[in-house]
Amino acid sequence: MSTDTLKVEKLSRELHGELCIPGDKSISHRVAILAGLAKGKTTVANFLCSEDCLHTLAAMQQLGAVIEQEPNVRSFAITGTGMHPTAPQKEIDCGNSGTGMRLLAGVLAALPFKSRLTGDASLCSRPMGRIIEPLELMGAIITAHGIKPGCAPLEIEGRGLHSLEYTLPMASAQVKSAILLASMFTKEAITVHQPSRTRDHTERLFAHFGIPCTTCNNGLTIRTEGAALPVASNIAIPGDFSSAAFWMIAACMIPGSKLILRRVGLNPTRTALLHVLRRMGANIEIVDERTSCEPSGDIIVRSSTLHGTELKKEEIPNLIDEIPILSIAAAFAEGKTVIRHAAELRVKESDRIRTVVTNLRAMSGDVEEFDDGMIITGGAPLTGCELDSFGDHRIAMSFLIAGLRAEGTTILRHCKNIDTSYPGFEGHLRQLLQ
Ligand code: S3P
Image (tube, rainbow, N blue to C red):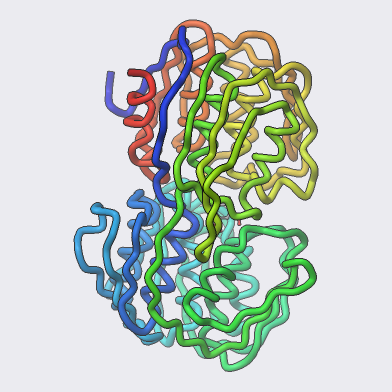
């Protein structure tokens, strides 16, 4: 079997053990960018050395940041450019990462040179109009050269940007963050209004690096003052809640299990899954909570009988990345789980409504597809079979977890993409199965 294909069997025993979850992907991207722009040297611990984040780190090197030590030792230093990035000598490759491309576009829009952002086939088919619009309103010129309109490669003609008050048309932390990063180079204040709360890592890291930024209206309005000079400040990145989610749901649904997940990020704009799982009957305990820039703690999950629930519209942005694995919990839960208002799933690394529905149906799951989500009727056993990840890391990991409870054998093709967010996932799986 090629290393791109992974196989799991139905588990005939419980899962027990402890895992140290790798660093948070969203925070790692932002730390690479802010430390790379800062004045001075930032030591970063537990950076996520996944393909996505390493692409962003390499982009910052192209812009003049200096990285000491091999990044794969997980703790290294970034010496920033003091807000004077240099023009990249070649195009910047963001790989598979929408976050990398959208956030970097915010920085490049403000710099006095031309640059070009590109990525793999999946990234070059994802919508970039959502960042092009506000960045052009601030004064940049961005041309999308993709096969589909509004898609990468992006050619960016940066320039001195001006003030903006902008209401996001969708709840997107990436779009918000692109504007906030661009605002660090403006002379005037910038205000962003969001329709509902999205992950606030950029705002927290602005405070950490000493960049003035205020929020009001319950976190929905963010204002920066422009002309920022981030100051290097060491940071330890907590484990990624979205990666922990795979094990949380595995422990919930495999009878007799108990897993302890160490040092996981517990930012409330990321943890809606905790509330949803508890509503479904999950037994989840949080211990040893602490806050340093970001809240974190240990998560203890014990198996329990789950029942279906209806996701609330305002919960969606705070668990958008966890919906593929939540759909697996739903397939094993008694009754219906209703996931609507989630059309954003269609423009992720794959069309995650289509890919979840396709794979659940292939496993004999009962799922109804809607433009903006799905309704899953759980409770009947799933059957193992051969599935595709559709090149999407979260689809691969979700269906490997499903395979631990489905009858027989589950084979997942095209799993290499797991390395974009969770290098070491297979090792953690093998560790728990030993
Ligand atoms: C991210 C924001 C979310 C999320 C993505 C990471 C971020 O996307 O799905 O995986 O780091 O800002 P949107 O902001 O586009 O919803």
